[in-house]
Length: 417
Image (cartoon, rainbow, N blue to C red; front, side, top):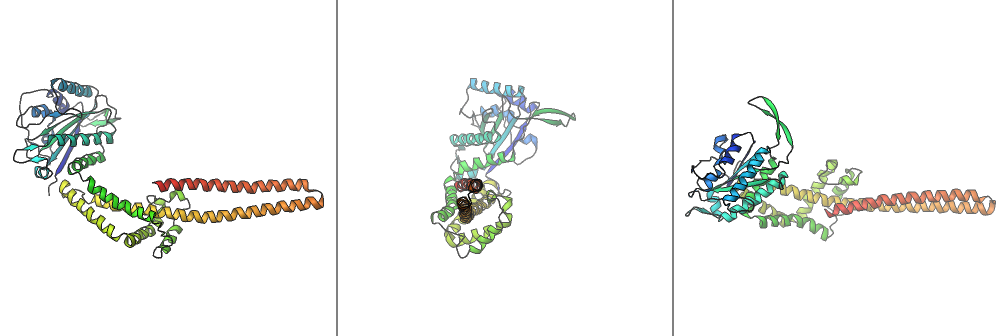
């Protein structure tokens, strides 16, 4: 199965001829060339088509228009302004990022964005898709305030596609040393390579905006949250539930001494994780069998949708796996929250015993000093010692109280997450 959305990305440096060609062709209106673009090809010539932007824009057969983040169509003056910005970017040694987003026409038709009979596309929607996608890219790369981009929609190939070119007129990215393979010399230039995560987010953004699966995914998230909320609202105690009581105690015995480490994602709880996961399974089977079945059904539906979008070679199962892992993590943290509460009760009980014992011994010593003062006539010094010991006992009690209060504040923060 071929993917419904294909993203092809690369960058060119200010030294390359492509950058200069793009600027030179920015407002050229002759040479109405049609370039055949093979989106699956790795050959540079099949992908290096950016200098044809304006040729394409003025081509009646192609029908698209150059647009930007704020303009649907550029007049002559605006084109000149964009050209000057790209020239400035080249002078200041900015890379130019080139992206081509290609669509399966049949899939676009299914989504209501393409009419195969009239060979027309909902350009308003497509521009919105590109703008949101580019905003996500700029934000992920940290250049949303410094970069500009231009794009155009092309009709004149087998697959409708969008070209986007992005530059920083005043570069902000770090400079790195790069080896020129032709001259075998090193030179410094702005880092141009984008994060793989950025490109993945761009592709997902395009598909998700068009499909608008937000409602379906909200249902999935609600099922995930519902299992946790049910436990809290119904005050279900897994520490005393017959099927999980032993596992609960065993997990607590394998947790680290530092309660701040009691978070499901921490490696320090690895020895307790198997018991926590088993408690999660028992809880879900016991209290949420129908919800879990509904969750898995909806996740399978999303997998089918993403398989169609991204094709057989993609990791379309990842969404389902990620959501199931998220459920396990959420439940694990809910269980650990209960464990902190149980541990807190145990410590408070022991804490109160310590206070009672210390107060008892302090009063006992004070009474003894009073007795010696009354009958031996030498109580002043002994009473002074007694008061010092009483203060020491109360100081220890105060420090214990402060430590418990700090841990209580930490627990409250964790429970809010």
